[in-house]
Image 1 (tube, helix red, strand yellow):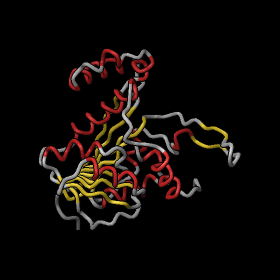
Image 2 (cartoon, one colour):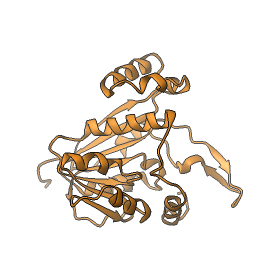
Image 3 (cartoon, rainbow, N blue to C red):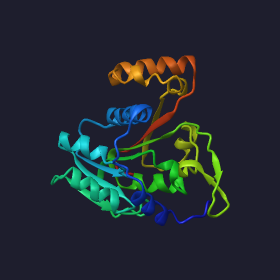
Length: 245
């Protein structure tokens, strides 16, 4: 078990780094495609979303315009406070809470989104279990994370211990992610991989940024067919609609 005070770490992280800073270049393009993939997985009849680890609150920015109620959640007060200030709405609330102890009843949200978060948490299985608990029956939990990431370590100048780059504690593939939750209320697990390391290395975003999501996705699939090195994985855990006895 990795031992560190994640609560204090991510509170300080949010105060020291501006998650709302405008991205540029390849980073901006990569984040855009992650957002578009998530949007493509959210059901048309979703009325409420919990955005776990809300970061720059793009979920609120996009889905509030669609009339969806959004709860922007983070362990630090910094990002939810900025989120509600930037995107004020009677349908938008900022929540400060630990994702391992969510302050919501079972079956509270049509959709729960946790984008690029699970690789940071100490116990991924407990993380999924708690997030899935607040998904409504028939609803979905959407997770994105780096795919088969080779975690790099550096020697910390403060503690003189090996420290993972970008605070990434775990690496995932579809088998690991599917195995994190086997509850009786799980109806279906599905996934897609996307992004391509070669395309990123060749800086093709300078051209691909002008492609719509649909056409970029076709190019991306073809690139991964030729050179199978996806960057991200998105998975959806769907909760059963009927009661479980």
